[in-house]
Image 1 (cartoon, rainbow, N blue to C red):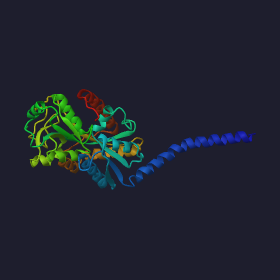
Image 2: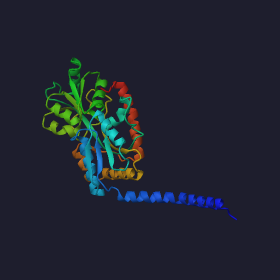
Image 3: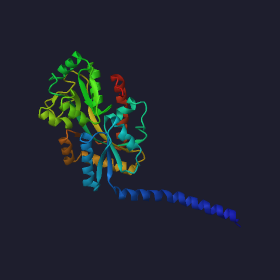
Image 4: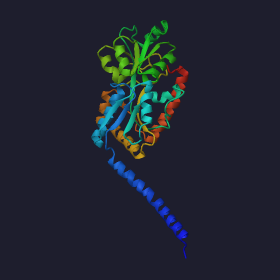
Length: 335
């Protein structure tokens, strides 16, 4: 005969076993319902730079793609400052619900070695989602600078150390690290003027308040075509179809120089895997879509090679290691 205590124990044990069986099913069903309902509100794309640059355009272009394929609404929220750290901290501390993404570039991989302490852990607090595009850069000078080739620019810079000033969108941003690498490889000394966003720096370059920039081609191309800026060299290993007559830096007296800006979407850690994978898959589809590729080409951008989320994470880790070496070799410092 069962005692009340034994009967209660068996009822409890049976209930526990039932829960262990049903809980995964309930969680799976909840996740499935969530995935079916997603997205049910606008998706926020955080932008670590001032509006108007390549990142802004790429985020909006991605938003248009999601509107066409998911019927999803989206908006871009600029949070410039501190070389992308301001926006990245916001992203890292946002709810991991699939409604916040951040678009980042090379500075995202540089900051861990540039700053001894960040308000987030790049690999722990954010999940790399997908690469969207690669954008070559170009060395541009104001027409008042007496240099029509890279070798002439190097000669001018060496004749008057620190006289030439170059702009960037802030410390550790694409323009900063690309130009610092150029200076390190050529032995020139120039003055770095950081701005709150590359578009602001570009305006000062056009106005003659800066001497040069290594700027992404989409931003500078129109000014190059109208003669308001002079293009000296492009930064990839090979010439680009966007400026086919402009030589590479490696061809122009800086052998071994290679730099191309990549653009990546990341999300807060613990964002549902189903959403991360879905976003990644959508961008992989986009990279093979002729219309999307054409839109990128108009920006001076190439679609990134299709990588899975795991491969995107591996890519970021390699970039962090690569730029740690560059920061040390070029003596790049947070200012």
